[in-house]
Amino acid sequence: MSENPVNQSDESLRSVLRQWRMETPLPPRFQERVWGRIERQYAAASISLWTLLLQWFSNSAARPAFALAYAVILLMAGATGGVLRAQHQNSRMEQMAQARYVRSVDPYQK
Image 1: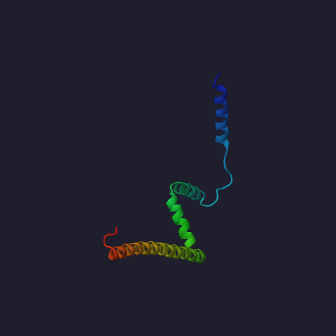
Image 2 (image 1 turned 30 degrees about the horizontal axis):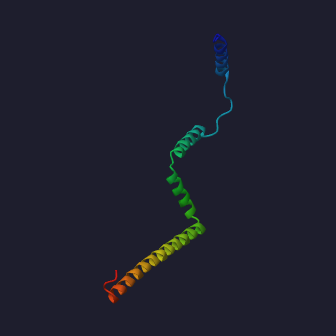
Image 3 (image 1 turned 90 degrees about the vertical axis):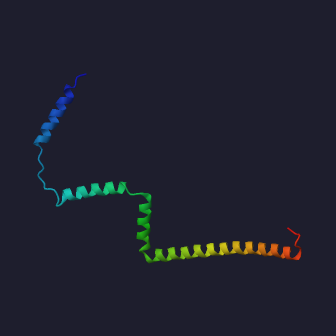
């Protein structure tokens, strides 16, 4: 196999490319927009998941319906957590009170 046909096609391609001239002008600020797209692609590739979630949340929170729903969910979660914590504390205090009562009635009970 010889590399001659490849070189010939390369030479013919090069000669065609040398003769080719662009006659229509590029749109205004073409290069600036191309480089801007390239920079945005690089920036988008380096964005982390946390940054995306934060952006989504900040964009969503700007809408009143979402902000209200988020506030209601947080209030409900806080209230539920408070109720569960209070139930746990009450049951623990009740057990301690029962143990104290048993000890006060019969000091030899464990």
